[in-house]
Amino acid sequence: MYRTILTFWMLLSVSMNFASLLAQDQPKPVPSSQQPAATQVHEAKPADVASPDAILAATYDVISGPAGQERDWNRMRSLFYPGARLIRTEAKKEGGLYAAVLTPEDFIERAGNYFKKSGFYEREIARHPERWGSLMQAFSTYESRHDPKDPTPFARGINSFQLFFDGTRWWIMTIYWADESTQTPLPPEFLARSH
Image (cartoon, rainbow, N blue to C red):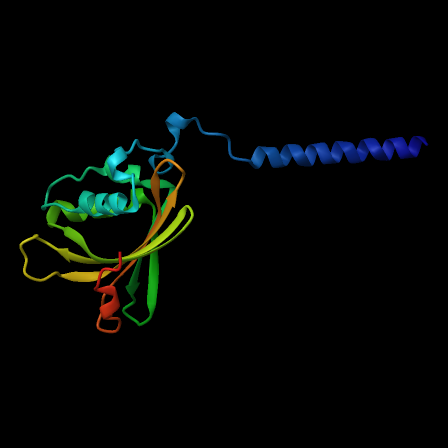
């Protein structure tokens, strides 16, 4: 009996010490005022997030402008759900493809540096959406120009938007895109509007 009680207390002591060690490895909660910007929610303009049309239009609008013009990055941040990602696919020099996964903050830093030197105007020319309940996926075909008066775009491609409706507003969960290339030209069905 004494041996059983002793064994029980030893096991209890070991398990409590193990739980204590595990608890020490857990990240401490961060007060909301100290959270990184990528996880903070920025207040959106209601008109920007009222519909899929609105949130896509706001996305193209906020990134477009002349060289040197600071974009309204808080407006852009307000479109994205916390933890959202932007994913660009590109060809590797040695062949094949890779995907660069960015947070909205990563995108803002990279694009912001580019926009200081280069004008950038992107517009949607076609869209193929599918919706089920609160989920929506839209293939949004785009054209990019350095100046809206340029006769031809310097790039075209498809932005694949994954959107979420929380019952009150729309959010961007992911923008996953690729530029058109000679190996992957845009087919006619993605150059005609379907919505």
